[in-house]
Structures are given as structure tokens and as C-alpha cells.
Length: 220
Image: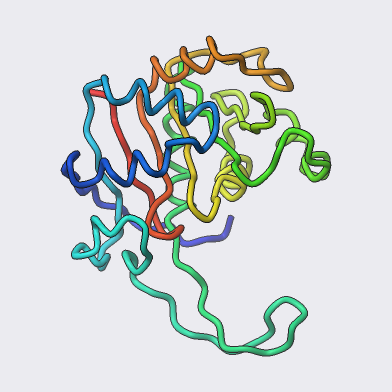
């Protein structure tokens, strides 16, 4: 990818302080998140975030806002085809998270990663314009779109692309689950499968901090 990887440090988070954000983020987003919210309330686990050195820890519970990461400098130059402007690139740890997901999947063939996409719909013609790797990991639930990753297809470029598509302006969810979803790509994920995914969830990765970072939940 060519991006510099930052070392991330784990910061435990108090459930009662982070839960309002989690509930607001998951509630009603899509079929998977609704099912997950009902199940995770009853499961034992803990929340944490991963941040690089120099992160603004005083903002750790300001989950809907940016400025948790060290900010990039303001630049001046061409912006798309609009001409020259002052701009600042939003910092993100998505490259580091892609590496974490690949590492987990490569170490355990029994794990799957389900990445949701709240931007696109199953009827969206733009889905056909993706790479073959992307098209070969798509599954659906009604109009909802999901990307299915496992040891067989977990590469840094593919996981990074899935996370890029995963970043809605208010919601982003990935689930590491102890379940095999072999044979489900290109097919409908019906409610019993969504329930199995959520019941076997080992880790949740929820977009936070206005796209700069993530909040994680890990099964006890």
C-alpha cells in the first residue's frame, strides 16, 4: 500500500460511557447491525480503542467527533478538478486495522470477517464496476450489501478496499465471527445466518471519531 504503519496502543473503555454511541451507531443501520445490537447486549465482553502515540486521549469518549489522532498539516494544491485550494487530509488508522484483520484471518481458518456497506445497495450498478476480488466477496440481505472475508481471500489490498467502502459518514461495522461463510458469496444472507454470525462474534470493529479511528468490542 505504501502507507506508513503506526504502532497502535490499546486503551480500555468503560462500557457505560461508550454504550450510548454503540447503540446509536448500530440501531437501525441494516439487518446485521440490528441483529447484532440485540445479541451483544447479552454477551460478556469489553470495549477498547487502538490509537497511535500522540493521540488526544482527552477526546477518547467524544466518539462522534474527530481530532482524536495527531492532525495532518494544511497543504495547498489541486483538489480533484476544482483547482488549487488549501486542504487537510483526514488522518485514519484504517491501514493498521486492515493489517489486524488480515493477521487474525490468516492465523485462524475458522474465522470470517463480515464488513458492511451502508453506502451502496444490492441493486446499485456501481457494484459491477469493482475489481473481481470485490465482486467475488459480496453477499446480500435484501438491499443491504456485505463483504465476506476469510483466510482464503484476506489480502491487504482487498481488506483495505472493503474498509474504504465500509466508511459511511455515520456508521461502519465489521464483525470477526467464528463461522464459516464458504459458499455464501453472491447469495442472500437470511436472518438465521445473520443470527449465527452475531452469536459467534469474537470482535466488533465500529467506525468512530469522524472516520479517524475505531472502537472495538472483544468477546470475553
